Image 1 (cartoon, rainbow, N blue to C red):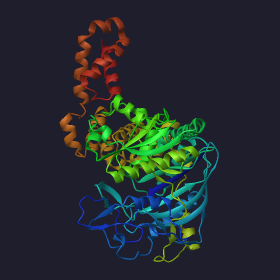
Image 2: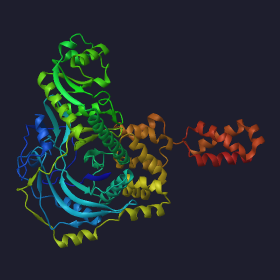
Image 3: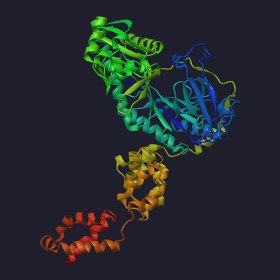
Image 4: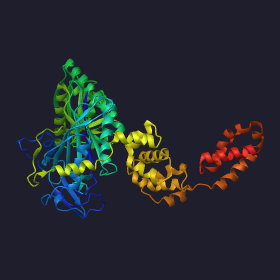
Length: 596
């Protein structure tokens, strides 16, 4: 197995080629509409991924805001590159012990999926040949690039895709490792190391989607697959394992197809055969086209990944024309009866088939894509870009881009990096993550597991909270982990929670309730505390409650003595509803028991 990792991280600066801010916005004030066309690279070649995007024939609507200038509506040439973004990039290059390029040259990368108004993305190499030290061995960083982030996809209609251009042009660091990651866990460790390096610059944007990881995976006799846009660090080992399993199963399918001497047959129009069907999808369709397959029985339904079969791979290829497909291994189902399945098999004189329903043209095009994918299955595994799914499996997105998508950016002159600039940046380099982790363990008496979690979340924010508020590291982690469980990433929103906990204005048992409300957009902590009665009880009131419970259990105390503490502790905490620290409750309870 070979694994390479690409990490993309947004920098918290102005846009790369203008002075606009990169804040995400809600209410667009204007829009433009475009249709993008594929172009050739400087080698006069057409990139296969770009060509496939052009077949979708979509129009793109770009929604702009008051802070959207003409540069990122592609109506004005780019300004000089953002100095702060370049210097932050150089800082990252130095932290990764990489070589800084002598001169920065921006290139245009052809991108016509609609995510760039111009149909290209500006990108440049900043550094080469970095090194990451892991417990599994060193991993080489091949390139460190600075580029523009894409527009945000907002929604999609039948023939149009709507984009927001507020994110377009945000400076984006891209780091690509060599394919020398050898285990799933090493992949996670490399991603964590790079993430900590990026965070150390204190110029990284925070929040969901600001850091994205792409995995490049291959096995012996397999193919390079790019899994694009992995968000969760803990899911990296899962995606690697699942992709290895997928490729192994596809190789088994290749062997089985060759062994059976399987064949792809013709396409048949069987619309009339289904005229009385109970399948709602087929009832609505103009045409029912069926692809004959010979000696494929059981293969279309063969599981290749978690909750995905070989038929799922075929459906992915057809999806640019139709929502889905039916195949013989999954029937009867979806309203298609056993009798209808048997009649199709009898008509085709075969053991397998694929059904596509739509207009005649769309159904034909979808079956052509399916035939293309089946033909590849006889040879092995196609090189693809795939989309990560929540369960660790992936689905086909587009062909793997080739090298034929770059050409020079003639509107941006070369950018010289002076030795004086490099020396200045060297003096400003932050503490290395490994050193910081060791220091945090020692200063805050943390174990390895909790320190690793803090390094994943935000070690600088952790130290800031520890200095400002009287809380324990375990409470910091409990709040951060709970907020993350609600799908929230912006830890800075939690400072008021730490403040209230440190001043006894919020009970620990109320943390989950408060953070659940935060995740829903309600950030008024005082109203939340009042609504759910989450204010701590005073020690004086707690003493009265504990004294009452002690008197009610006098007989038990006289028999058990100090051992009665464990018996009465739960009763006290229940009566106080967790609104007093357990340590304080224990002290008062023991004192009152000893009086008796």
